[in-house]
Image (cartoon, rainbow, N blue to C red):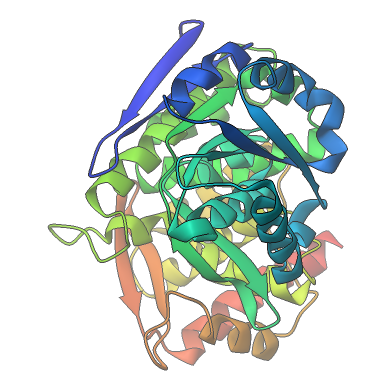
Length: 370
């Protein structure tokens, strides 16, 4: 991969995703002309890491810097309300912009602030975690959490640009970097087998933030998301039997249930890894995939250090949480499963017997590991 790569996102509101190292100077071009005020919404613990970006912004714009709480705590209605109040006091208009700087939660919350202020203002995302780079920053989904579940309140609001500065990964805690591979490897299973090959060939090289493999994995995972999103922005369905954007939810129905059971203290990518292993077992039980492909899920996620089993919540509690998932239709549970690598399909209304059997495998493995 060259030192800088630009991936174009087409559709009704086209934008560019710029991938490279030391990219702060590229931010004004992504913001475009006419912007006078910039609300810089950043994860408060990243203040020092954010300084190079602020040094670029401050000479050019009237900058309102708003530090946000850590992790999922920022996706709270009270936090969003405080941001709205700050924008109002600063006189933000429809021609002004929001820049987010942080992980997936910051991107989700900051994107929702931009989507809801004056019914939508410009936003540029600067993701600082692997998870945010390959997932939250691209595709226009924004959202916050409620007591009923994760991301149940939100809006589709595509960014004006995304700046993926790989240098931010150099300071990312190891556990956070590894967690991002939940989404990277997911993209391999649903669309790009070369991702799986790169990870399986040398997991240590794949997870080296200073190495040459991770940039290619980031680019490939983002391209998977772009290809799906451009064809189905608002998750209305794909073509020729493909689930469309819903394919990106592979493993997420169980993942969100686990996150809720854990009080949103588990990293999203870790929950996704477990959820993908669970859904692979469900696909095996329902005759969609082979024993070997199901086993490959646990092996590949496990190779980079992600969890592949879970037994800290009962089946009944997880099933109740899955029933309020956004992918459900009425009382019918819907899951994205594979017919093969790169061939996602929707499994609608599987039997509780199969759901429970897949859980028993997941929980049984967890018991053996523990």
